[in-house]
Length: 416
Ligand SMILES: Cc1ncc(COP(=O)(O)O)c(C=O)c1O
Image 1: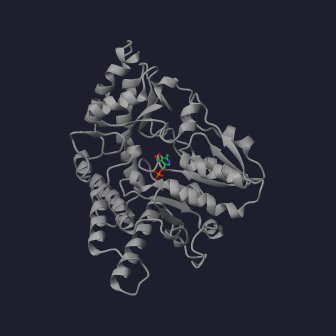
Image 2: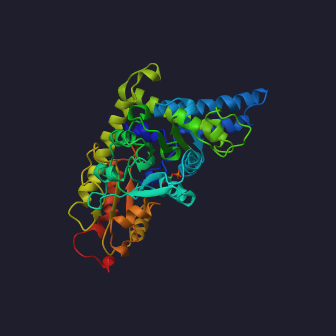
Image 3: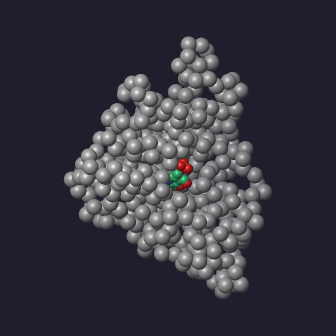
């Protein structure tokens, strides 16, 4: 059971006068992150690699940032690339892998993903790579393995798919999908952005080849992190400065990439999780002793209770909820997207903003998924309420009250 007072006090940006339900668009940064960034800037940031103390400190902070994210992903620090965003890191990855492949080789993308994990692979088509599409099932809004199998062939080099689409919330079994992809001799590149704030990550256990997360959606600063297996990173050809040694990981993928003062803030994410774990389970001691699983189980339970409240309010109304109708944490994360026929989604998001609720509408940079769902065109996409573990029952009730005029089963004047 999470202590919400403790949790909320750890996020200076949260404010009781408005409800932040746009967490898939960006979470509040933890105080521990903000403090580290301010301290790093206050000490003066200079490029790493110099012989003096300030440069050595910058190098140490950079290394600590990598180590923290590596620990969280269950990877090694040299396998974690940091960049400005997931859009940037996946674009870099696609360009870096292309020299490994020949004209006529194939990649598979989905239509469920955010464009960040589609566009970079689709752009390889111009270089002779054949692109195939693994389509989501509109009735469930999920990707099914039976639809992937016929697309895999001996020239498939990589499959790019989502752990959890940012307009659906349904969870995909990454380990099982990755196994099928590996059996076909291809690589798995997973977008974990919408999943990462809600569940523990273990890239080793899942055996994924690449896994992307956006740190500003996990209580950190505006950066993207990309895990890549070491041998694959070594075999890639990033367009880095030619004088950087091929084995210099992860730096070879990073020149000019991530803002050092923001990287300095990254251990604050892990510090926050560890502090919350200790507080929740009343355990003191080495952070390494605390399995992250139990903390995220508590987080999932709390988030699911909030999602259930929201889904119950939408059930039986005119709202078409995307993805599983249940809040079961095995089936979905606490991200609820919906559309109401003949009501522009932007109107609903504006009404929520008017009521002090931060939410969002549109296609969320997943226009292919939204098109595939076959929504009423007058909706202009979906309304999305995306929750984090610091959200409260009161915030959900406020959102439900603001939605009431739209979801009332009787036709309203706004429906014209
Ligand atoms: C599922 C998903 N993938 C990728 C991205 C892109 O992340 P970034 O903003 O770090 O480029 C987003 C951003 O909203 C997202 O929701």
